[in-house]
Image: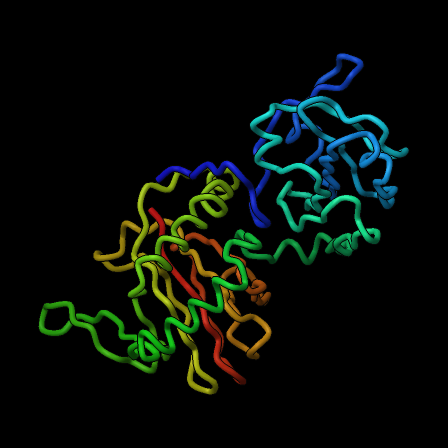
Length: 314
């Protein structure tokens, strides 16, 4: 499986690298020079539009980019020329809010009606707290909120809420599926809508797989079928387990889970007991990726229903 390219990039996509050329003849690359801090990326269509750009806030990098380096931007902006196809992918006449990982967050049409709100800074954790954090990858914005809502409707309506989730056990020397509430309680279904499945696959290709390749140095070549999950109130959990311990799933390398409705329930967090007490509950549409060899659990849901999508990568 290879990450898909797109002619036009959307919120949630990470900007591809590009060489940036300044009018003084110097040049640099986007990823080498500008990763690691919040970024404003403007694509004004003329000098008048550039002059109307707001002054960037402290701590935010600000780039004015076009096929030719835009002129007339206020102090605090740096102007560069970039490849025309890259500029076409970003779009013209926009001010993009970009996170420190060079991921597109939101576009603002130019000229902006007000100064865009930047993402609040996060207080750094002291070393003694980071020591006990599990080595998991969280990828925001893999699924859009609209897609998350469509998947919940599909599970509840088209899949009639799904089936009770079973576990594989050995009986009389044979592997059999059976329901075991001592291990887990949830409902699940394989998606029945080919268009929804294609959208999920495309979003993983363009947003999750490149991050997995970069962070874990692992090229995904196959995935298990998607599963839509529902963990109901007072009856949804998955006790501590590993995802690749039996022969039928030994091929699995990474688990990927997308929260579909974070905030509509309490409980239901991931925990990795071998790596400390911390709980993980990514925002709606965000993916949690971790090694299938890691012991993990989904804690009981106490209020509401937790919806999620999961698959396994190899």
